Length: 283
Ligand SMILES: Nc1ncnc2c1ncn2[C@@H]1O[C@H](COP(=O)(O)OP(=O)(O)O)[C@@H](O)[C@H]1O
Ligand SMILES: [Mg+2]
Image (cartoon, rainbow, N blue to C red):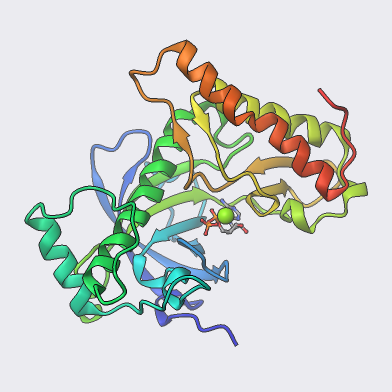
């Protein structure tokens, strides 16, 4: 049986401090109720939440159902251990030590090495920076891809922090992103024969548009693509920009073209569709 922390069980209340993704001037405290958790969690914790009554000034119209991504290092799957890494369970002590060191400016860079197994606070810093990076990548990508929001990627409505109850005793305030809910099956769950050629074309065009707008997704997998809505004329939506690389302001057109050519994500999509047995016309 999958263990789900009480924070994330259906019916749980979450307190969020949010700013609009479009105009982030004012922070609002918003109460959300968990409707469902998209388990198993790997990196972030992804939830379907209700926000009622609606908050039309930052959360589009009368909508009350949203996807909340929480970047809490406490629940990272990697902590449980892998073939090459021992388990590193969360402790408040290690989290507090890491937060203190960070406040003194001792670790303001992203560690690229794996800390020593005995260095619990080092692991906390490693996990913390990893999740901060995922959040930063994702928000930067959504900002760049504003013209595609609601068409081929979710809307990004708000970003902010999860206000954990004092009793939860934490030294960090996890980042959150509030997105539109895109109903429908993941590409992986759809029979290849039911994926029509226009869907394939739209997916390749979408990925090409990412590049033109200054984004490389870098995690194009069938789990990160949803066909929505749930019927025969479903359109592809791409999710999960945690690994995305966003064009830097100092990158020239030539440099960015080179980065796009090196990654060739439209080609990667075709290879992925081939491996799933989906028919497509080579471009
Ligand atoms: N906006 C969304 N609408 C519908 N389902 C979503 C949305 N965002 C995430 N999900 C679901 O949650 C899963 C995990 O979300 P994802 O953004 O891929 O995070 P992770 O970094 O954990 O892979 C997705 O594979 C999808 O099933
Ligand atoms: Mg994913």
